[in-house]
Image (cartoon, rainbow, N blue to C red):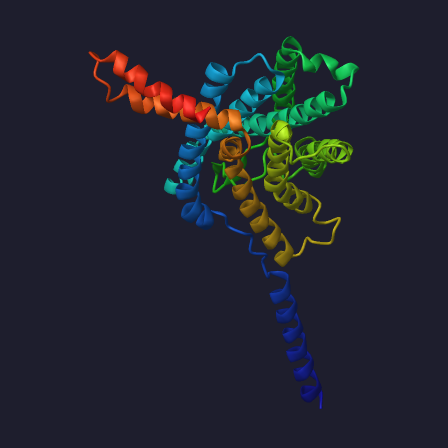
Length: 350
């Protein structure tokens, strides 16, 4: 009987230990962004870079040379194009990193993240300034922001916005810690900007700063101004084309960057929302990467909005393309013919 009772107890103990051991060592498989980045980023970002570079350079050229900088909204729209160019200049490096699987190195990684962050925050701030400027002009508001309605005041405000965007980014850079993988510095496009994963407080703080300054502030200003203006503004009238352009730029910005801000917020505060399980973390990491890729394509969208909603931009773009086509094939000995041929086209367009 002694032998009979000891054998089952020993077997039972072995079964429990094996079962507990298998549950304890079951690992959480994190989402690996390298596969999606290698398949999608090189082709998508190359297209976005070429289209965005051409479009935003045309915006800069037409705004400076043809539309002029004697109006406040033109100064802010010019700064928006520069913001997009700052963001665009980072794309070739992310393409090279995704295509070859090589890390750009810690110094270059910091430069890329700084350009992306400055371009994003400054774009959010200039969208706010454009919306507030349209609101002031519509209701003839005077007060603290009245200086932004003058050219000199708008130039000073633009410089101030760039300084604030740089300072906000330097705050993030001060807490940046390079993440290591296999004893090598790791710099991936899909990683949130300047989020040290080992420090929960700064992770939450920097995420909230990104959400508030990059999304909630523009959203609040847009909703407030739109609700106030919608009561008396007739968007069907032709003289309100600039209002439609400014509000469309803001709406597109919010729609393209909003999902990424939401995904980033849920990923940073996953424990507070009871979403720290393996499956939830995997889905949050994947959704953060996909929404960030979608948001990055925004830097080539604004020039298309100018074509659809800005009649003056379309007219100057037509004249610019028309002059480019005329100057190339025209012989030098017949200047009179070239000028006579150009005038009827411009007069009919007008």
